[in-house]
Structure formats: structure tokens, C-alpha cells
Amino acid sequence: MNFRPHITVLGLIATLATATAAFAEEVAFIAILKVPDENAQAFDTLAKEMVAASATDDGLLVYEFVRVGETVYGYERYVDAAAHARHERLIEPFLPKLVELALFERIVTLSPLSDGHQELFESIGAEIGQPIAGVAQDRPQ
Image 1 (cartoon, helix red, strand yellow):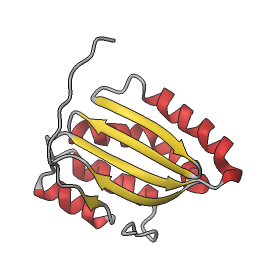
Image 2: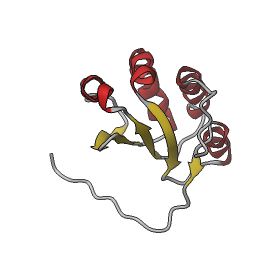
Image 3: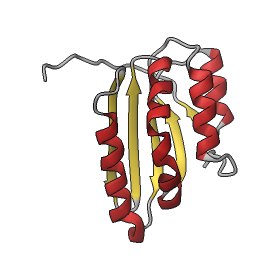
Image 4: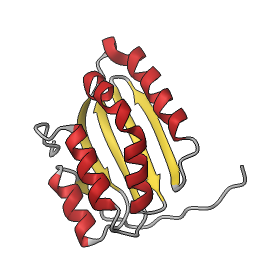
């Protein structure tokens, strides 16, 4: 586990929001959280509130949570770093409760990153994924 728990999530969000605005590449990552069974219902409610608040967020491509037992996977994908920074500011009010209910175990980037953005994710203990191949298609809603 490379995620450094001594870095607060609020500090992380402030750093990401400031630093990501300068870059113009797509941003995608997976956050892996441990949510104890006694927090599951409250966490699920919070996750639904965060998703609902994000529904009209410009530049957000995917924002979802999936549970497997006590492990929750959060997948986030944005059109660019500026969209990611806007989203982080949008969900900032939810973060104290998120930190109370869940422990961040791992963050893995899924998209190519600029050098500066890669340094940012590395500074919070994220693992930098090396894309191999992929495809995405627009789908009618």
C-alpha cells in the first residue's frame, strides 16, 4: 500500500484542485477504499449524495462507486485536469464525512499524465498506471 495516510484528504483535494487546473489532459483514476460493515449504510448514502451533486458537473465523464464486501472502488474520469479540479471543489463539502466513514487504501491513475500531474499524484502516494491499450465510444443517452 503506497497511499500515505498522514496526508489528509482535505489537503489532498486542495492540492489537486490547485495543481490540476494548469494541465489539459484527460484524468482518470481508481480509488480503493475500505469501508467497515458498520459504516456501509452511511457510506452508501453519502456516495449517492456525492453522485447526485455531480450529475450536472461539466467535464465529468464517469463518477461511480462499486462495492465488493468491505472494499469500495471509486472510478473517476474527466475530460481534462480543469474539469477534475472543478469536481474536487464541488465535492469538498462531503469530504469530512467520507474520511470519517472510509479509509483510502490505494489510488491508481489510469490515464497518461503530464510530468507535473504525475508528480502531483505521486506526491499523494498514488500508483501511476502505464496505459497499454484502450478504446472509448460515445453512447447516446
